[in-house]
Length: 422
Image 1 (spheres, one colour):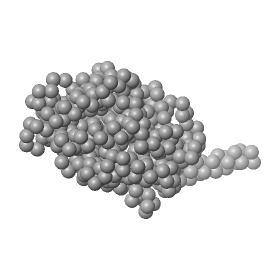
Image 2 (cartoon, helix red, strand yellow):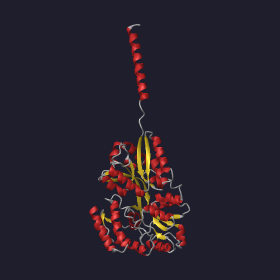
Image 3 (tube, rainbow, N blue to C red):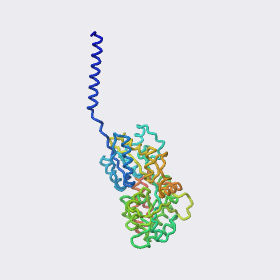
Image 4 (cartoon, rainbow, N blue to C red):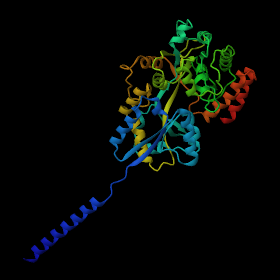
């Protein structure tokens, strides 16, 4: 064997050993552990059983190195849980958010700047219908949007000899009083005015102001002493004094309101479409309708309809922000957002997504018609300490309904309490 042949054989042998060694290393190297994302939200319980988990399973299939652990509970406890996590820096990686919470959590540094995550991921933001910002940066993306129509118990309306669903304040008042006269524990209207969870001021009270083109603001600042707010206060108190509102309103929360309606103890309520599945599940025999909110008598403008979003954010203390963003972008994708908005009876956060309302049930079709014919509004979204503003108004509103202060004192005191918050 000459030197050249010896050198070639030696080189081949060496390459073989290196390849074998590399193969052994590959076999011995442990597989990368899957990242587990914790996702805290109230969405899963309000959707058909298994529907939201199915979306998470699809995400995991597309991203085998990421697992999603759903931390689900009612809306009322989700805010408390997220707040506790923010204080202890144990907030879930991904969190469901209400637009009214964003200012507080973003200001405290509990939420990650999504503008930064989108920039890093080179994400195309053009398909996002809206973004909730704080100091110019995005901290929440609305995944789906819900309108808050009027829910009416068909049986109770018929029993009270109300022939059509109320469309004006005077018709609504007449219906509430007639239903309340049926006897027993039945009342015409249920409103939740708990100070612990004060969103009843937004969803159930101010919504009746917005439905008729009224406003609680002027140039972005408080304007609670205007005629429209005063008239609304007086209107609600007239129903309160007439015994047409469910008792215990001062401690009722949103979920309690729904339970009263489901049990047939309340003829009417203003509520989110996301509760339709819950209502049908808890009382399959209940026949109910949805309609636009009642407006002031004589109002000729486009009716307003309040809305709320299932928003999403990422925790600033998450160790898996890149993976968390993958989950957010998955939910905001055209296909997934269409699926979620369809099963939630909501309107999509992706401008290209289309919910399957055309081939869906009658309630969803009616909801879409209401949405198309209304002016969608919510003056609390994006305000500083929005939930605290609701609470401050709720304190004075309870005093007014109890007869402890006048309407003028209510608006004056609430205005004084709101101004420093701006």
